[in-house]
Image 1: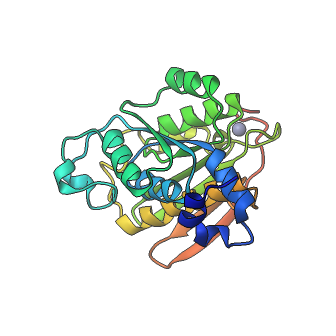
Image 2: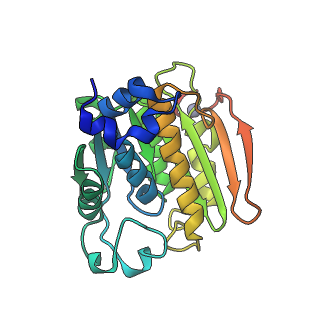
Image 3: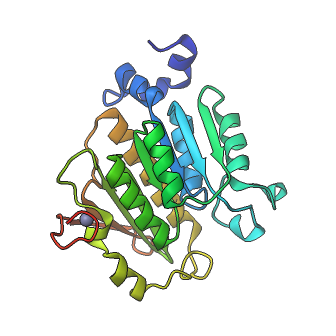
Length: 254
Ligand SMILES: [Zn+2]
């Protein structure tokens, strides 16, 4: 049962037939992990906190730098040198004090992620990182732990979004699409947002899209990026979708 305060706070989404009180209760009961509180994680976390996701876990080992502020909309100039996960938790709590927020000021690695996802049941992981090795790690751990994942990335003016529901035995995975070895030879690890230019609002679009897909997945609505690579071009404002299938030679799920 939703409280009077919850009915008031979330009234504009509860009045949507796609959400309703039942959908709001599902959002309130959900536990979501957001890996990376940068240009994607900022809008994604803001929208998920605002929407009333019951428990958010925020993972980031970085501190706020002035050069982050062009796109990482959770942070202010006076947050310089502070832990991103800690500041993000404060900002989100100010936006919505009704939800539980846990800040993890560290980098996610395979052992730590496996431990976290096996000890508590998570409904969803949002991959908001800008590093291919961590992305492949998140893919492997989520698949093993059977936790759905929504991934996004942006380079320059080009965005990618894809989701996998690993509760389904026959789900494809990120490595079906981009095998780890091939990807690493194309794009060295060092090539992330710190070395490649990126336009801020494109990160806003893709991070918001991740929050949207998360809400849809938790509320039981169709998820348009499920097993589909959604490509967004900020230059032309055009979206394209490529359907994915499991790859029998995939090193992770084949
Ligand atoms: Zn695979």
